[in-house]
Length: 113
Length: 114
Image 1 (cartoon, chains in turn green, blue):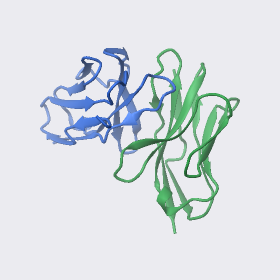
Image 2: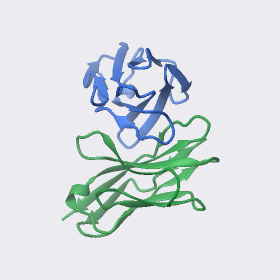
Image 3: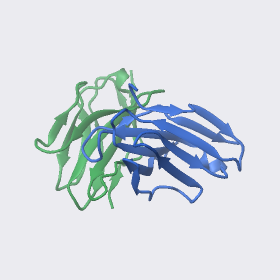
């Protein structure tokens, strides 16, 4: 069965500092990997995804994530965060026989001035 | 419609009552998902539909929970004999198909059982 682990429930960081949000997955088959973001009082929306090809994927607002098959990881990074990046970030995996979309428990990124 | 629509947006019910939560997916989306979001619990998978069929119901917490989808469109999540631990935000999402396509989420239904 597939599963997703986000070890950090909350990550406090100062504005303009770099950040990494960790995500590890468990699956015995090929997977598709996603990061979703939930801004305060808003619904979830897709941030970026890995389907195949280049293991490094980027979002339009400066985030990037790298698929590492040997470490079964898909960590999310940003070299310099803004106050507006404060949100909850969810890692998700899909694939296998059922293709259901499974989420991690989320990481709250709290950017401080 | 333009996006995934869920109704009601808020529901307060008494313990022991039945509730129905509705989801209108994006037109043409064949896959539909239900999740439960509780504080500190992330998004708990409940069930998903491919068309009108539910290949995986493994996430439904108990036999008090059921869901159906008709016409490959609207879905209803029913909770019978509600308990206080059912209080949560119930989210619906739809995608063109399962697997590698983006899932679009509704705003959710906040259920409070008193």
